[in-house]
Image (cartoon, rainbow over the protein chains, first blue to last red):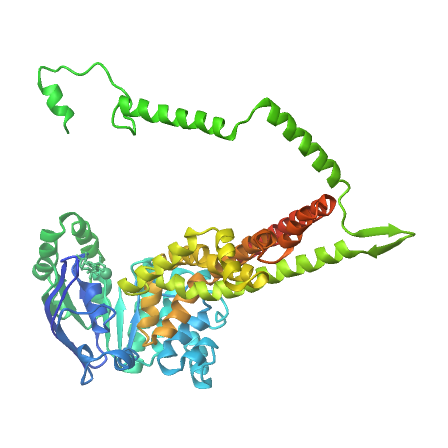
Length: 267
Length: 285
Ligand SMILES: Nc1ncnc2c1ncn2[C@@H]1O[C@H](COP(=O)(O)OP(=O)(O)OP(=O)(O)O)[C@@H](O)[C@H]1O
Ligand SMILES: [Mg+2]
C-alpha cells in the first residue's frame, strides 16, 4: 500500500529532521508513530504527501511513486491521501460546509470552486459525513465558532470527503482534553475499518497509541528506532525511543516520559 | 561584559555616569544643536517676517475675509422658492465630477493593487518577483498625488482623466503595501490544509488566502475611497478636474464669496465621506 524507502529530509536551516526512514503501511491497519518532540514525526507525514519536499528517498502509494510526480499529477496523487492536522487546519473564516467540501477541490474546476458549485453527489456526501462525525446541522456555522473537538471532526470529515486511500494524521489529539481525544481516536479507527483504509498517525500520548494502534513505530532524532506491536513496546524500547531523543533535546522530552508511561492502560 | 574588568582592579567602581546619547560625544551633540539653531535663525531671516509685513498681511486677510462673506452658493431664496443660479450649477458639476473621479480611481486602483500586493508579499512569490513588487510600491509611494497629477495633466491634458490617473497611480503605495503585510501574516497551516486536498494553485488562493484577507481588502478599499474623495476635491487646483478646478478659477476671478462656498462644500463632502468610511469599516471588521 504505502512504501516509504530511505526517506531523508534536511531543512535549509541544516536540521536533519529525517535520516533514511523506511516503513510500510498496509490493509486497514492503524500505525502509530511515537517519539519525542523534534523527532521528525510531522516532517515524515508532510513528506509523504509532499507538503514538505523530501531531500532523498522514495514514497510509493499503491504503485504510484509520489516522489517522482510534479504539477497536476502530484495534485491528483494528493487527493488520495486525506490529511488531518494538529491544529485542525481549518480555514477559520469559511463555513463548516465549505471546509468539508474543500476535500473535493481536487475534482472540480477553479470556476466551480469559486462559485461553491460542487456536484450534487459531493454535497450529499458532505451532509452524510457531517452526520457521521456527529456534526449534522452545523453546516452553516463558521469554523472558528466551534469547539476544539468539533473542529477536529470537521477536519476528519474533510479528509473522508477525499475518499482517500490512506489517512495521514498529525497529532490529532494534542490540543484536546483526554475525553475528547478518545472520541477522536475512536472515530479515526472506526473510519479506517469501515472504509478499509490504513491510518498513519503521529501521536504524543503513548497510552492512546498502545490502546488504538495495531502497530507502533518509534522515531528518535530522525531515525526509526523501534517497530512492533503495542505489546512489544516494553521498557527497553521506550528507553531507546526517548533516551535517544533526550540526548538531542534533554529538557523537552524528560517530562514526557512519566506522564506517558502513566497513561498506559493496565490491560 | 566589559564592566567586569573595571571592577577587577581592586573593587573600584566609577563614580560618574551619564546617560548614553545618540550622538557620539558631547562636541558632536553641541555641533548638531548649533547648526539646528543657525538654520532656524536663517529661515526666519529668509522669510523676512517684519512687524510691517505682519500688519500688511493682517490687513489683506481682513479684506479677503470680508469679501468672502456671505458665501455665495448660487442659491437665492425669494418668495418661498429657491432659484438656482450659475454658481450652484458649477458646484454641482464639480462635486459630481470629484465623486466620480474618486469612485473610478478607487475601483481601478484596487484592481491594479491586488496583484501588486501579492507580488510584494515575501511568502507569495519567488524572490525576483518580490523585489519588483516592492519597487512598484515604493515608486507609487514616493510621489505625492499632486505631483503625479501635474505630470498627468502634462501627459493627457486638463480634466478629470488626469486626476483619476494620478489617484490610480498613488493607490498601490498605500493599498498594496498594507495588503502585502497582511498576506505575509496569513496562517500557513490553513494553506497547507487546502493544498493537502490536491487543490490547484488558484483554488488554494480562493479557499486558503482569500478568506483570510477579504475583510482587510474591503476595509482598505473603503479607506482608500475616503482618501481619494479628499484628493479628488483638491487635485483640480493643478488642472486635474473636479471641484478643485472650480475653486481655482473662482480665485482667479476674485469671486471670493464663491470660493468660500466651494470650500464649505468640500469640508462637508470630506466629513461625510470620512463618517461613512469609518462606519462601513467598523461594520466589516
Ligand atoms: N520548516 C522548518 N524549517 C526548519 N527546520 C524545521 C522545520 N520544521 C521542522 N524543523 C526541524 O526538524 C526537526 C523535526 O521537526 P518535526 O516538526 O518533524 O518534529 P516532531 O516530531 O513533529 O515534533 P513535535 O512532537 O514537537 O511536533 C526539528 O528539529 C525541527 O526544529
Ligand atoms: Mg509535530
